[in-house]
Length: 153
Image 1 (cartoon, rainbow, N blue to C red):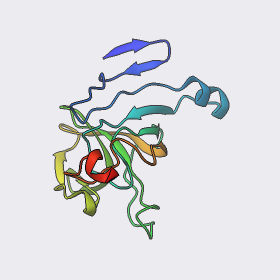
Image 2 (spheres, rainbow, N blue to C red):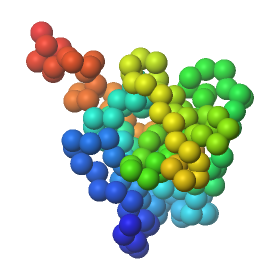
Image 3 (cartoon, one colour):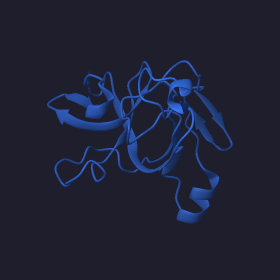
């Protein structure tokens, strides 16, 4: 873990792994009046939350909301997403508590399987996603197994 004037960098983002790069946004701290927000980068091969959270997206995380909220949402867009430290990396998506386990439920269209970790030994909620910056088209927006060349035809 490396501390800098702009916040804490938890992991360097790489193009070949679903990892996150976390930073404290100075403009958010100045405008909101507190330091409860960080940015997270979604790796370009992380498709667990496609199509809602695309690979290469940047998320704004509210670190003051680090408990899972259950049941007060009616659509997938209302369901809270969380940014979680799973010790061997990070995950960003939908979570629920199941006893002493924290379970990630990937988006059904991602074709990824749910994952679970024991808390607090294997996972810790860093915060709730408050905003997303993402590409609407271009690289990373093709269906699984589809190439850009095939899409342009």
